[in-house]
Amino acid sequence: MGVRAGSKQVIEDLSWCGPGSAQRRMGIDEAFEYCRKLAANHYENFAVTNIWIPSDIRPHFTSVYAYCRWSDDLADEMSDPAQATELLHWWKEELHKGFSGRSFHPVFIALHETQRNFSLEIKPFEDLLSAFMQDQSVLSYEDDLQVADYCSRSANPVGRIVLALARCASEQTIRWSDSVCTGLQLANFCQDVKLDAERNRTYLPRSRMHAAEIDSSDWSRGSGHAKDALADWAKLARESLRNGMPLVCTGPSWFRRSMRLFIGGGLQILDNIENANWDVWNQTIEVTKYQKARLVAKACLGLPKLTLADAQSAQTRTAGPRSSRSRTSNSLSPSQPDTSS
Image (cartoon, rainbow, N blue to C red; front, side):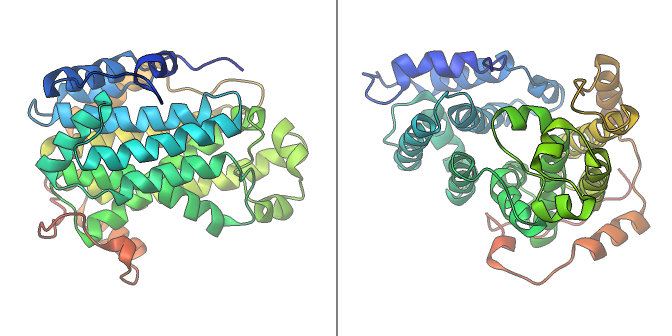
């Protein structure tokens, strides 16, 4: 299995800013420029959001993205899980150094400035790493609860960090964000069944396999009732994405547009999977250039519109008991949906 496009840079950069390398300390501007180039060179359409993200926030967005990119590539692009685990432990040490301003790594020089400007907590960054470390040893899951726990660390922390950058974190927006991020992660699982099988990973829980009367071999090959299991799983992903829809009318305009783009992209992936007759094993499912352009246009135009009834319905569906996971990462007051946007 080859290295993903865009991931090559991280692997190459280990030679000069990896474990044991003799690094010079970059200036803050140079560190942010490194993060910007990493984001611009990656295969995903991250740069699209630069159309509307304010210039004063954009560098901080790239520092968070660079952290996630490095974390993901250290986890997935190493040939040996033991090597990946060792690098992830090193990366965690750098994270702690970075939050105290002691890391020489360009990502953490930039991220330290972001942390200071937005009072970010270290926990979401640690949670991401715990999920990536788990991927090196946990290759399958028993039920939806175990998968949800994984998503709470592999995806949800990113949304919580973005909420902090938008300065609109509250108990309610965190619930909506968690729902969106979990939905995006599940959509990604549905899209990447074949890729995950090549990595010997199975995210579809055994309880769902049992319900569909298939085993892991059927799931990896797309045989038996694997398509039925996929369709049912995609339904869960779609519901999770829709439950977070009130975010498209919450917070500053750049945040609302970004949420429309991210949610729309996840729903488009699920539509494309369904239109491919649920066959993710024999064809590559992607969002086309035309679909991407349409999603960006709809995000800029504020489409689809969300009614007050839609917001209230989603608020009811995602409401739950308070817990430590629902606390805000800053001291800002709760933000309410603006259904007029």
